[in-house]
Image (cartoon, rainbow, N blue to C red; front, side, top):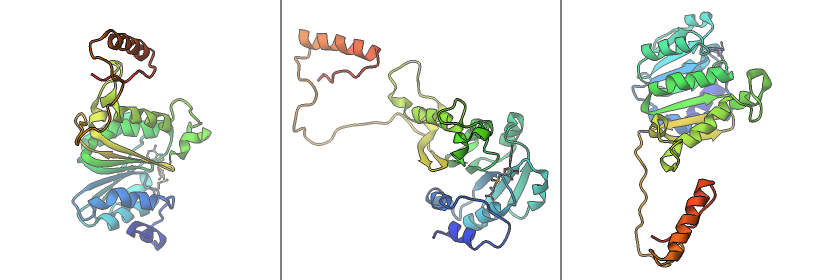
Length: 253
Ligand SMILES: C[S@@+](CC[C@H](N)C(=O)[O-])C[C@H]1O[C@@H](n2cnc3c(N)ncnc32)[C@H](O)[C@@H]1O
């Protein structure tokens, strides 16, 4: 049991509401921040117990911000825990939040879990996360639940939205002008899909490099005389295949 899980299991303070398997995920992605001067934002305060859990886990240098639509939670403010009241359905509130908060190390979206709430929050706050920070969206189960706007492969769900992020992550390898590298490609290091949770690790990235080392044993690809008619014919066939997005022949240059 890691420290977070044991805090949760032994908690007799303010109530915390979390899925049990989240604790292993949190510890895997959050432990490098422990004891550091960091900014943690959790959307969805509930009874305030998780904010106290983060405070206990990250230590006295961490500044914890809780965001919730319920104005009552304001009274849960304490040393190193600040509460901001507003709705994550409201882009103008999220933009105000982005302007007011310091750069964020970790953001946990555990708020209303509706599709627009999760998507708006990502769109407005992902850039506010530091280049080596972590973004967590919890309770993706709602992407499959009709009452939250979910449904298997239904347009507009957060899960469908996050599948595009997989493309964004790999955009350095695109050969199509309609799909190019953007800010997300350059700032996401990895996407970790777990049951019910997506964790995005940030990192500034340049175009990846691949080289060969060592001595070749076998010739690679089709060995054709490089400027011969057969080569040129296959080159042309490849162009046609690529146009129709079909797999093409690998030619030795
Ligand atoms: C699942 S609970 C949060 C649990 C808490 N993080 C914990 O671990 O104990 C969801 C919270 O999101 C809040 N919430 C619901 N809709 C919201 C919205 N549109 N904007 C911000 N918070 C919202 C609710 O008031 C509730 O406190």
